[in-house]
Amino acid sequence: MRNIWLIWRKEMRSYFVSPVAYILLLMCALIFGFFFWTLLQAYLQFSMEAQMRGEMLPMNMPEEISRRLFGNIPVTGLFIIPLITMRLFAEEKRTGTIELLTTSPIRDGEVILGKWLAATTLYCCLLALSAVNIAFLFVYSHPDWKPILVSYLGLLLQGAALLAIGTFISTLTKNQIIAGAGTFCACLLMFVCGWVGEYNSDTWARVLAYLSVSTHMESFAKGTLDSKDAIYYLTLSFFGLFLTARSMESLRWRS
Amino acid sequence: MITVKGLTKRYARNTAVDHISFEIQKGQIVGFLGPNGAGKTTTMRMLTCFMPPSAGTAIVAGFDVLEEPMEVKKRIGYLPETPPLYPEMMTGEYLSFVGSLKGLRGAELKQRVDYVSERCAVADVRNKQLGKLSKGYRQRVGLAQSIIHNPEVLILDEPTAGLDPKQINETRDLIKSLAGDHTIILSTHILPEVEQICEQVIIISKGKLVATDTVDNLQSRTRGVESVLVEVAGRDGDLDSKVAQARIEKVSGVSRVIFKEKRQTRSTFEIETQKDYFVRGDLARAVVEAGWDLNELRSSAASLEEIFLQLTGTQVAAPKDEAVATEAGE
Image (cartoon, rainbow over all chains, first blue to last red; front, top):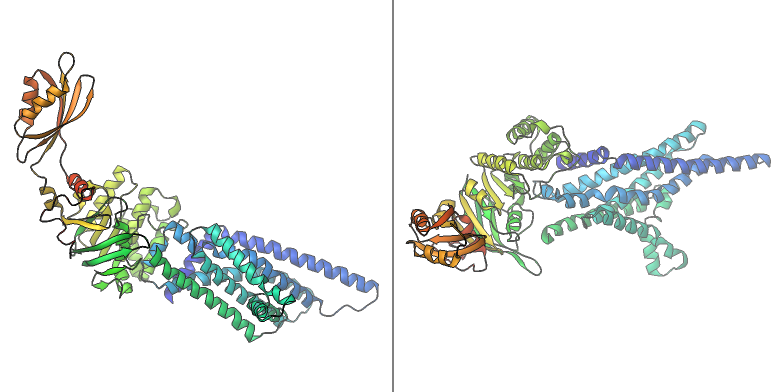
């Protein structure tokens, strides 16, 4: 436990001492802000037209905005996640500090968990930036907060799962660029592999659609907490971390 | 303190370390010697539990590296070839991070960090980022990192590589001063280093153990045999180097004369003497009596260097002294 905390603290420090964390935070603030602003513009336009025609305003507009915003965040995550995980192991392998970790009395699992939790924490910080935009909705209207919370939970679980995959890919190479590109490719495939289900109903297509990370987001986006989807993300995280552990073990045999 | 038996590391196509066996007593400094690519680093990595051996066993500080790696790791300090530093960390912060990785905490951790930064002379850069330190400092921080938990065994992979001569001396002195408390293995391909700091030498070549002995014993193998460098010049006009060589060969005690080079009127020879002969006086007289000038006469001391080259060179099987490879066959 103490060792996990130790590694977590070291990783957090290295994110926040280097400009990495700040650049990611800035990127996310800009992108989320832009999404929110365009959605708000569309909403204003829509309500103005409705008023001109003398119609009633739809009641659920704030919820509509938050839902659309949350729909866009995973796409941003697709680009952000490789940037978070690519250095985790690749950098340690390149500078040789991995030798320090593997010859210290600390388990591989503790190193992996510490690193993954640090990556997840940083992702949480990025998600939290979008809460600034959501807060405006609460100032000017009264949206229901429970579905919003569920959506955040979904985003967090999805992020954690993809971060675990990214952590695994980072153990495969010394080169951060390769690790980042590989993670981006893997995440993108995980996102879009559900598309085959749209025009094909064979068993393999349905399985592939089920494996996609985006299909499991739908229930969370609607504000319903479906244990099936939560378990899917948790399983995927576990699977990624398991692969990381195996890869780290094989590192000892290969190197 | 360290017992290695039949340690082997095989890769897909080659064998990096081939059935190495040796034993190291507590408190010794042992030089691990071999040309580049001989398998020094691989052996050290197996001793530090970085990688498991393909065959054989190693018992470090009383624990088997395969069966109880955690216990071994608690008792060893390791400095890899490039010090494992996180460039964005401060020196003090890094040392306490490594300290807590090794299981230290609280007041003890703080006290050990103070102690090792004092001992390795890095106290003045405690608040500097590791990435901005000079090579010498980085090496010393690496050394400080390896002794932070006061390990029983210290494994240093080429601790003086890439340092300037002054830093090399400082590092050597530092390692020497650590000897009492720790058992130290250090790998190197620099021979004088071994002569200066080690008590025992283990020489490996192409993954095989070729000799293990004390430095004194190894040196005494060549003691008495001297190698002398002479430069002879003609007084007026040219000097026929063939004539000069023939004259030198007649001096009693000279066993072999090798013509090195000729520059203008000067010729240089390397002379090997027979055991227990001191030829320099006779040599000088012979040259002067022949009417030539003796420009230079110096002994090019036979040292570990020659043994090393003999043992690791192409004719590995050459001298089978009592000490050579006594343990290699086990």
